[in-house]
Amino acid sequence: MKKEDILTRLEQIRSQIIEATHRAGRDEEDITLVAVSKHQPIEYVQWAIEAGQKVFGENYIQEALDKVEKLKEHKQKIQFHFIGRCQSNKAKYVPGNFSMVHSVDSIKFVKELDKRCAHLGIGLDILVQVNVAKEETKGGVLEQDLFKFVEDILDLTNNLELMGLMCMPPYFEDPERVRPYFATLRRLKESLEQKLGIDLPHLSMGMSSDFKQAILEGATLVRIGTNIFGPREY
Ligand SMILES: *Cc1c(COP(=O)(O)O)cnc(C)c1O
Image 1 (tube, rainbow, N blue to C red):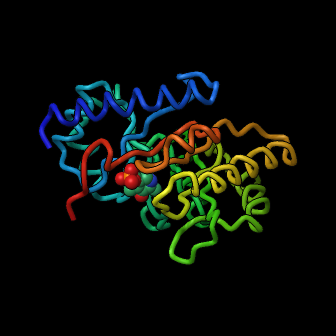
Image 2: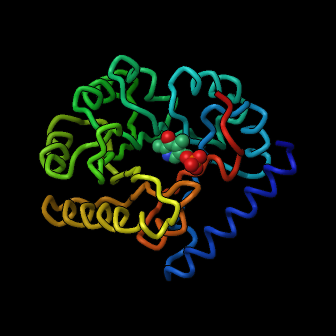
């Protein structure tokens, strides 16, 4: 990928997001594009920053810390979101380096995050990942365990701000088939808000193949990698 390619792709995705937002009768400011830069070279991230991209999603702590370090001159204007698997032994690296965690699915991890936040005297926004299709290979809390899990978070943490839910449904050739899963996540968010009397402003859902459907179902954070940066290099 050349610099111009990334600029053009970002531009295209931004207008597709705006189009879907209008189709859904929603405000443009309600949706944040999280550019997923895992396994992408640092120059791609730099070019995206030049093109005005502010939020980046990373799955692997070590790789992300490396990028945070290399991009520290941009610290004031960019943010990293952690969207990968939660490993409790890595939790201590999250606060201070990331502004949000999308993929919370373990109480042990949550406790570690909270402890580290307390130590640093800072807060951290979190989302709970829900395994909406009950897939064995995927992370996330099952629907039947969600209420207890959220109550535990509210009881056990002082420094974390629970902001909403995230999901990663199965891939379908036809993105319309993913829509029911997005609708499920929205319904779960609404029912948590009602039952627990809390406000959950965010729904993180939609990737390269299905972000338009996610926006129509209420996504506020869309996580897009391949459509911006091309295929990942492993
Ligand atoms: C890799 C990844 C993405 C981006 O997927 P693309 O299909 O490349 O847009 C989004 N969310 C999560 C959790 C991911 O791991």
